[in-house]
Length: 77
Image (cartoon, rainbow, N blue to C red; front, side, top):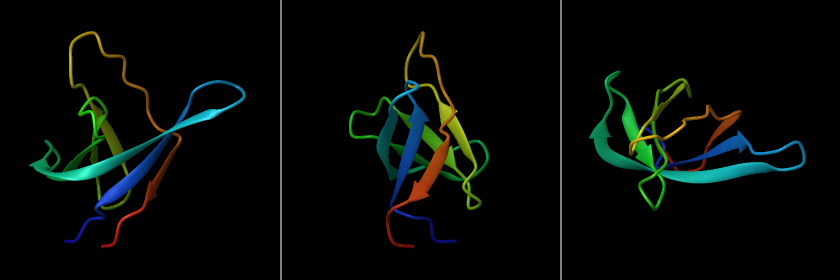
């Protein structure tokens, strides 16, 4: 199966503005067998299924993981 190269993850940051993070596909797969995506810093990591389901992955200790409100594929399939 082909997966998009990039996704935009949109998180609710405040009542006024949302926070968007661009993540890129890595060569790794998560526990569900789907690709792991991460941002340029490697801090935001997520396993994203072929149905757009997201499982956020901790990249360090004491990290509080939020679930994105919206997941948009940006890359080609």
